[in-house]
Length: 75
Image 1 (cartoon, one colour):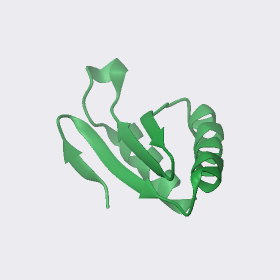
Image 2 (cartoon, one colour):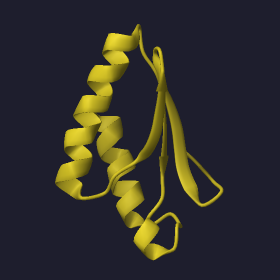
Image 3 (cartoon, helix red, strand yellow):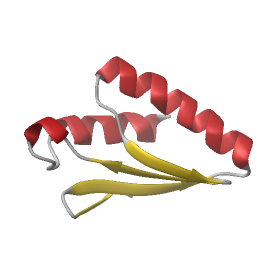
Image 4 (cartoon, rainbow, N blue to C red):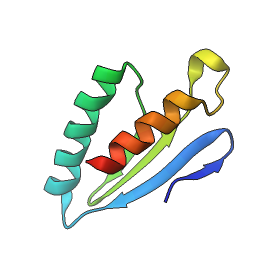
């Protein structure tokens, strides 16, 4: 479940191993590029932390973030 805090939508995804986490990040990267809205994220082994905010709107959560979050969940 995405949490909204500090003007960001945040979620941590856990995977079986690093390879699955990296494959997920690759799919998200293609999706983000298609939507022209890119996440702030980090990866440590099997965990991917994502934070979404709209920089053009002054670093607040907008509909662009909610749409990307929904699309990421669909992956």
